[in-house]
Length: 419
Ligand code: LLP
View 1: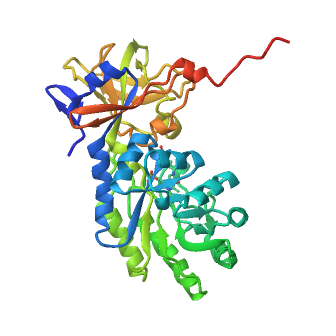
View 2: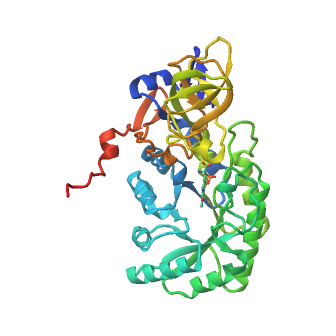
C-alpha cells in the first residue's frame, strides 16, 4: 500500500486530496496516514511471530496523541525519554506497564512518577543514575525494574549526530563497566534487575551493526549469568532506517529476523526481545504540506520561498537531511532548479536544495518522509506558531493538533512592570 499517491493529477493521502486538507486547515501542516502507521507497526510486531517480544514505539519520533493512541490500541509498548512523554502515553491510553524509560538525565521527580505508575523498565545509563534510582525507589517503597544501557562500541555508519553506540558517545555504560553496574543493581533491595539495553544509532541502513551489537550484548548476558545475574529481556533499541532518497534499508521483517537470529544463536532463546523503533514506524507515513509564497529567480540560484521553515522541519538544517519535494498538482511547464527555503532569517533555513521543480507562486508542495522527527522537533523560532497535524483515515481526516495561535505562543510571557 502506498499512503501518498496521485489520483486524477492530485496528490492524495489515502482517500483525501492534500489540496482539500490545505483548504480546510491551511499551510504549513503535517499530514499522516493512519493505515501506513498501523501497517508499519504490525509489520514489526508480526515479524516476531510466536517469539516472546515487545515493540516499544519511540515516542520522540512522533509524539502526537492521536499517533500514540492508534499504537496503544494495537497493543504497542512505548520508549520514553522524559516525564512529559510519559504523560503523553497515559493520555493517549497507553499501558505504563509497557513503557521503557531511556535517557541519560532522568530526574528524581521523573523516576518517582514512573515508579508509581509501574513502568516496565528503567534503562539506566550510568552508575550515578543507578544510585539515584536506588534512593528514589527506596523512598517510594517500590522496587525499580532496571536494565543497564550498555554501549557496545559498534559503528552504526550513520550521521555522527545520531550515532550513539560508539565509545565516545554520552550514552550508556561502557562494556568494561557493565558487570560492575549490574553487581551494584543486583545487590540493592530497591532495584530489580530485569534486562539489558542498547541503542546504537538511528537511520541505519544495514543489519550488520545491529547484529554486531546484539552479539556483544549476548556476550555480556552470558557473563552476567555466570556471575549469578539472570536477565529476562534484551532491549535492542531502535534505529532501523527508511528510504528518504535512494537508501535501501533492510525491510522491517528482515531487520527483526536478523535480531532474532543473533539473540537465539547466542543462546538467548528464553529472553524476551524488546525493540524501540521510531522512524521505521512513522517516517514514511507523513508529509509536510506547504505553499509556495514567492519564486525568486536570482543570478546564480532560484529560490522557491515557501510557508514552511526550519522551525517546522529542522532535519535539513541540522543533519543536511534530504526530503523529497513533490508538487500536489503537477504542472507540465518547464522545470527549473530551485532551493526550497522558508521565511526564517537564517541561511540554514532551507528545506531542500537544487531540485528540479515545475512551480508557480501559490502552488502546494509536499515534503515527503516527514512523519518522524518533523513535528516533534518543531519550535516557535522567529515567533512562528507551531503548525497543525492531521491524520487521514481512509476517506476522512482528523485534525489531531490544531494550529497554535499567536496568543497561545505568547501566553507564558510578560513585560516587566514599571519601575
Ligand atoms: N531508542 C533510543 C534510546 C533512542 O535514542 C532512539 C532515537 C530510538 C530508540 C528511536 O530511534 P529510531 O528507530 O527512530 O531511529 N532527530 C534525529 C533522530 C534522533 C534519534 C534519537 N534517538 C533525526 O531526525 O534523524
